[in-house]
Length: 402
Image 1: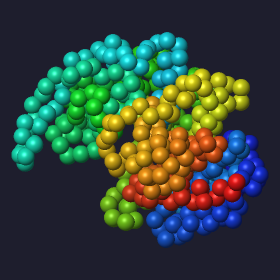
Image 2 (image 1 turned 60 degrees about the horizontal axis):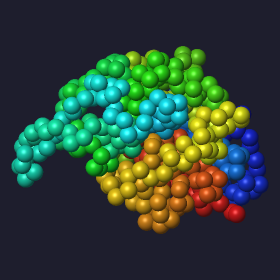
Image 3 (image 1 turned 90 degrees about the horizontal axis):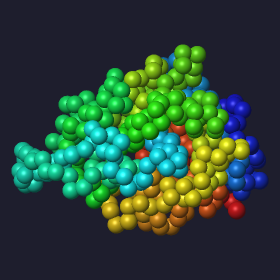
Image 4 (image 1 turned 120 degrees about the horizontal axis):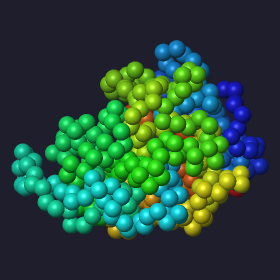
């Protein structure tokens, strides 16, 4: 476990209020999971008070070759892309390019006059639907907080999910514009603004960024976010020179025996998915999170106003609920991140105002402004992601000594 150069200043754990003994326990816990064969490998990073106090790698980067994990390993972020896309949208919002309450069809006319699927007989096994007009347009706020009615094809087996799959809405062989055009022909799962439903809303935000900026999403990210923050290893695909640095999963899930298939990221995709397409390292993502924790600035580069970060990390759901497997008890949702509302209720520790999100393959992060802390765990183990996200959080908070 040879540390790579840090992307942020480093400090001895005790100097930033972290217990070296507790961090040793955390490392042993992750290493034991590697030894048990439930994880191929992992990278863990913890920062507090502006300094990285823990940055370690475990296991192997590639179970086939046995190449050891290292701190500069590249991981498929999947939905940890969403906070970056949301920041991109808010950069344009700060320029007055749109209002959060704007109808998305004002900028993406393909999404005008949408229909909503309604079950004709909820008690019938046939699940027949009728299409009814949307009661109101989808707003940009709806997209950022996942109350648009747009879903993911893998989030259920109902008629709408099947229609998404038949339309190959997930295909990476289409442009962002083509994907949004396809979404405009599909019904919503529910009326806009009434329920939190996780889905391809952030992909639509990615297309909105393209239309308003006149650039591809990747080019916009590089110019406005990745370049200014020094995130040199973050992109929608991995360059050939870096293929050996890419983390891979086990061929089969160690718990179920099912085949595991991750995104193909060695070649440039047509679809630059704002909801789940980026590849990055722990060091790069740490710079993004430190920017948020700093109130929108890092190393002299200001991306966002402090008040914009506060808006993004406030709850925007109120009494709305939905998808309890993802929107955990005690949490609401902001603009791109889940937000903790209670010191209790959730089964993991944290602080009111802490915000987080994760990715399908097991990557996870959270930021705790009260503790001036953020932590990142990067793995490529889809079936084990919920367990390790909770384990990592428990052990990080157990390391806080003052």
